Image 1 (tube, rainbow, N blue to C red):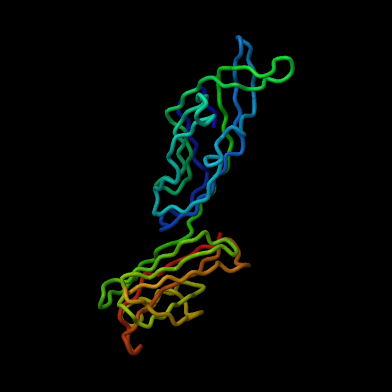
Image 2 (image 1 turned 30 degrees about the vertical axis):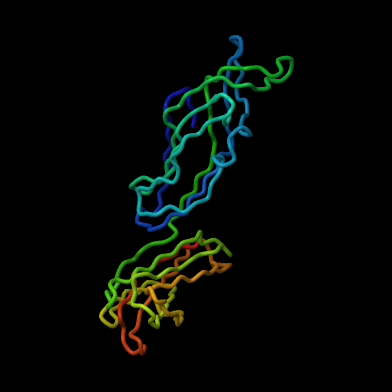
Length: 262
């Protein structure tokens, strides 16, 4: 993106599924170049990337979906206080309603900057006439709520996941709003089957079934790590089936959950 003081924006040429319940967002500002004038003499393509605050230069975060979502919407000031600002703008990064990534800068103001012009000129205070920002933005739909929850005696159980779904990365699976202190079947599958089962819909194929239990609040949280070796784009499907105290009948089922490897 290049600005001479006007608002600028960029939209990705490709889209992701706008229905994700959680998006993994990574962005990096790889280069900031400026054009300046000093005593009426133009100097172009000067690299000032090192003056971008580190907390704004890059970020990796999770953003709740579905689209549209805003991952970043905050002021950017270069150089940071207490120095007088040479570049001020509001940086925005996110996903529009159609699933296309966007980045933009609004309320742009260009000022003066002390910079090494090189050669015989040395360090001088110059006036900025143009700023070019180069970066990378990656947004993936990581977690998808597939619906099909079945109400139980305590209400409708809700199942959610968080974590970037990259090899070895930590993740958390959390069930809430289920009956308290109940045996629960945690079903994991490699495909989505959506077949009738015990008055509800079994979302995942039955590749793995684990025995877990809700606590006194009708919840559980399972810390884990995303397995190594799962190719990017692979979907894993999960669902929780809550049982009665003796484990002989169903007392509610969560929504199905789809996790997409990154």
